[in-house]
Image 1 (cartoon, rainbow, N blue to C red):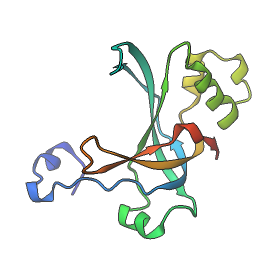
Image 2: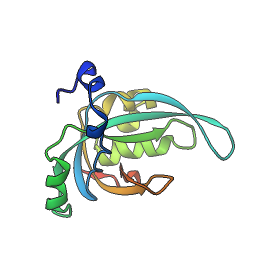
Image 3: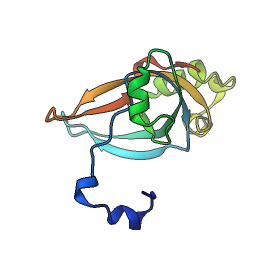
Image 4: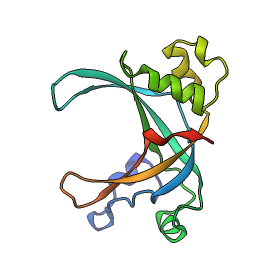
Length: 152
């Protein structure tokens, strides 16, 4: 089915399926475009924060990824995963570490946070994908483990 709005609206109910999550394992990702800046509210205390959310497309699967699951997923794919960074004084070091140590941007130590965000699109990095259950436990979501980012 073509991926345009009109044809999506014509999808019959029996063809509406929960997407298969990207299989667990290590991937190389490509950051496909500039970040979307989103304001989020913490569930615990109601505080608001800004998050820079990047779309990342897996471009290579490591040998740690089950090939049968990968084929069932529909590899190669244009589906994306999200990578987010909180834009707060306390969390900016994570953005700096990513740009400097993972993406290896040589001038990272002399950049502002704004310049770092602009530097990320088009770059590649390596990261594991994990699965997180939905709150009701009926399905799983794939997500980039942002605590284990590495050089591509």
